[in-house]
Length: 147
Image (tube, rainbow, N blue to C red; front, side, top):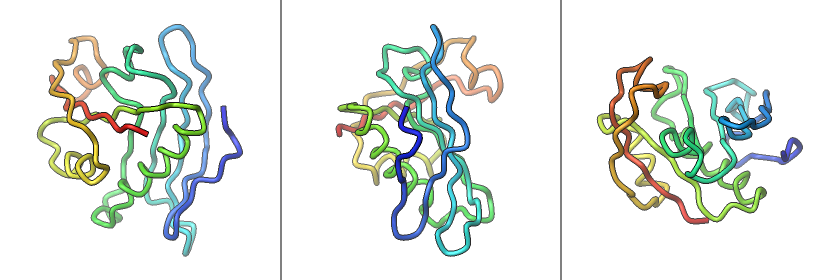
């Protein structure tokens, strides 16, 4: 895993705080803080799962995940963090990544549009999926980004 890669633009940077080795079910995963360059404030978190959508977790949850803290929403930090994660994907030799969201999450769907993704479709989540169990989410929009 690429622990020392620099992920930054002119406004934010992402700092790795946890690396999870993959096992039979779970792909290798980076967990990162999203921080502002100006004051090093943590504005959210993001994650990147290494691999393709043949892995169950990537098929239903995507390679990329993000969460921006409420006071910092509306600044396109999630869009910027996703673009930084694409650099990480390329460093792993990946040629495409998947990002998913709840069909009713208009903000995340807009991020996917701004990332110039290809809409793959809407996938029914299995009843044992984390999002189904914990959030009641029964479907995810699936988007692919060609690198």
